[in-house]
Structures are given as C-alpha cells and as structure tokens.
Image (cartoon, rainbow, N blue to C red; front, side, top):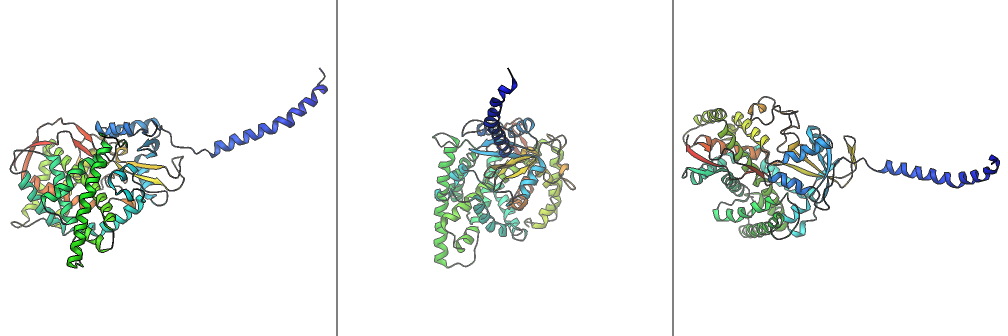
Length: 476
C-alpha cells in the first residue's frame, strides 16, 4: 500500500492521541513527584496497627526487639509504623534523638495519645492541646524543681527514707523491692507536692495508679476486661479522689485566708486555676513520676546484688559520707554531690532497664529527615531502645559496667533517660536526689541477696520484675 494513502490516518492519530498521551505522562510524573517519600515500614492491622506487636514485646520484656527488627529491615534512621491508632515515624539512634529534641516547636510539638488522655484526664479536657497541658505543668514544676528549691528537700527525703526502711524493711527477713520502692516514691511525692502524709489518704491515691499506668501503652479498645478498660476505670477513681482533695484544699485556703503556698496544689489554686485544670496537671505529674524512680531504685538494688564488687564500692562511698555526719544529722545537698560512683551505678541500671521507653511528638509541618518526608499531623516517637543497647554507642552492651558513666560519660544523645532539649524531664534532678538518698540509707543498713536470680522481667510500660524482686535481708 502506498505510504501516501496512510498519511491521513497517521495525521489523524498524531493529532488526536499524542496530546492525550503527553497529558497522561505529565500527570503521572507530577503525581509521582507530589507523592511524599514516606519512611519505609508497614502499618499493620486496620486501627490496631502494630500496637499489639509492640505491647507483646513489652510483656515479654523485649521492647528493644520491636525497634531493632524494624530499623534493621527498613532503615536505621527512621521507619514507619502505626501505634495507638496513629501513623507513626520512629526515629532511631543518636541523630534521631538530636533532631527531635532540637526541632521542638520548629518541626514537632508535644503530643499525648488520645487513649492516654481518655484514661487519665477529665473528659472535658481530652481535646486540649498536649503542648498547652505540658507547658502549664512545667511552669509550676520548674520553680519547685530547680536546685535551690530542691536543696531543702534532701533532709526530708532522708528522714522519709529512714522511716520507710524502719517500717517496711527492718522488721522482715524478706521483702519485695519493686512494690516497696513504689510505695516510698509515691509517699514522698504526696508529701512534697500535696502536703499529704496520712497513710490512708496516700493509699487511696496510690491503689488505682498501677492499673492506670499499665494501660497507657495498650491496644486502645475500651471493652470490659481489657487493659485499657481497667486503665479508664482506674482513671475515674484517681480523678474522683484527687478532685475531692483539691476541693478540700481550696476551701481550707479560703477559710484561713492563706497567702503563702505550701505545695504545688496551693500555688495553682492561688493563681486562679480551676479544680479540673489542677486535677489534670497533678494526674500528669504523678503518672510521670509513679514508675520512673521506683524502677531505677529496683534495678539498682538488683544489680548491686549481682555484682558484689560494685556493691562494696558503693558501700564505701556511702560510709565515707556517713562518717562525715554528726549523730542524727540528715543528709544535705553537699552529700548528694559526693555520690558520684553511686550515680554511675544508677545510670548503668537505667541504661539496661530504662524506666521510660521514650516519648511522642506531633509534626506541626511537613519536614524531611534522612531523605524521607514526615507529613504534618504524623506522630513521631523517640525511644531509648534504639541507643541503650546499641553496640555502636555502648560496646558489649549487655554487660553491666558503671565505668561507662565515669569521666565524660556516653556521647551526646546516646543516653537519654530523661529526654533532651527544651522538653527534657523537669524532674530529672528531683529523681536523682530521691534515688541517691534511698540507696544511701539502704546500703548503709542492709546487705541482701536475690531469692530468684533468674526472675523474668516484663514492661508495663516500665520494666517490672515478675515476682516484685524478692530479696533476703541481713544487717550490713
């Protein structure tokens, strides 16, 4: 067939179809260019996501496995998952920690999972900004937790530690360290921050907190019998007890015409905050402090039992301090500063058994990290489990070695039990004082040995010995 005969058909094809093809290719190119390069990973099941996998890892005592498996498979910098019903970017390593800590209010802001809010806060406050809640709480805590304010707490902590050991340890040959350390820490917080000293009143506050904290990182299904449901019920009890207490404090302030605050609740009342607003702040504070210091104490006691040479060096350091004191003279701020090796031991215990897993953030703008785009509205998670047992930062990471923290200590952003940047835990120094004061009194009075050296550990969400760390006591 003559090519000339085909020309009309070819012209018709070019005119009609080529522009369509070009438009299609341009559309495909633009669509591909507009699709963000999200971090690699998987979302898991609908709604539940990978929450169940993460929670099971906590229950088995292996939260680091969840992080390591995914960072190895997808990316050592950041990977995608879905936790607590949210798209989540998990930042890994020291560089990931540094980016989130230094990017606060530039790329990310504070965020609490809605499930946590539902379990703990008053229903009218569930939709409040997490950043706003955190900022207000820090405003009241920081003046109370700065060094010049904390100095006056040391003698009180020392006296309370002695009273606690007299009542709950000395009369017995065997004790469970974990529940007793929680009792001590909670009683101390009640006394210092709410002026509560009555045992019955403290018990009313303390009992539901164990259920509440256990449900903070759980599959957010509010059905009878679930961990989350128990947390919601416990939250209602906590709010009822605290609201009654705050209302009582308010009436006493009005009746007595007090103008000087004796604790943090008084300060908030005098500043005109409502009972509900105060309730939410106090719940947040107690949740943050409930398991952290008690966990550090529990595992310090555990490792001191495992390593007699470390125990003897701690004991000698504490005896030197004791010998410098007069009869009945309580510990002071300057004594805490001398407990350098003891604090190295505590830090190594917190590295191997971290009291807190990490914290959440929310992206306030689209941003790029390690070549991946994190969309606005996505949640971010930094976790100690990407660094604490990483041989890149801690050689022979499973070995208990307090000398890691002597001298300059670990490299920046590799050891972050209290977070970092502008959102670093304001209670860091308070926790140090509480832990060291207790360990001082414990080692100068007792020796101990574990009754079950092979006791299993689970996380809820802090690490907890399955049997409460039972030990046999004898006088030092």
